[in-house]
Length: 221
Image (cartoon, rainbow, N blue to C red; front, side):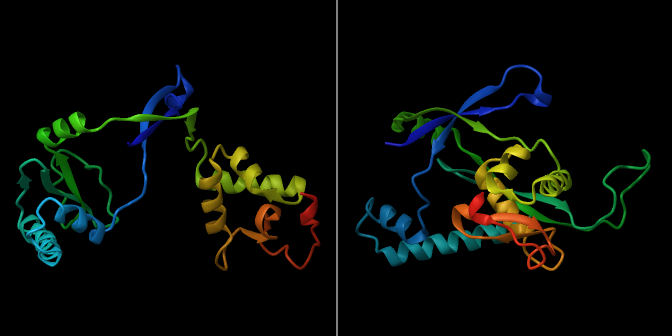
């Protein structure tokens, strides 16, 4: 039985009440082989190798038809179409009404998928949801730009010497997961603004270039 959780989302510009919406709790992602095994159980007379070959050919066929400008509608599944974007750094605003946007490079951005009404109807009739208890989780909104978050963290380090993961998350209105991923990126490469020191729960971040120049008592944090 799939579970869902309730998640809180801050109101636009901080005006009005926060909204709450249900979100599925994903068990895990199935790969192609696992999907083929499940599909094989519907018709055991067809071998798994044939099913896998058909799925591969289906992907190749979608690429060929979509690249020729078709949309593809599969009954009980949905409709596939191309999503495009500009592949240059030219402005996207028209200078005037006669601007023909000449000499623009356009490329494929993604594939749009619109589920069929029959698929949604079948899902609603067969899906029994159970709530994953634990209150309402908060969806963190990026209150500050990346540059602002770096500056705020740098100012914190100037004042306190180091910054911890939780301090970075709280300071910049991020979840611990988002803060951890961001700090990892910000402490890699020659031009990274920060460096890390310590491991596990004792890990902290300092300004790049400080390590080896100033001794920091990590265990005290």
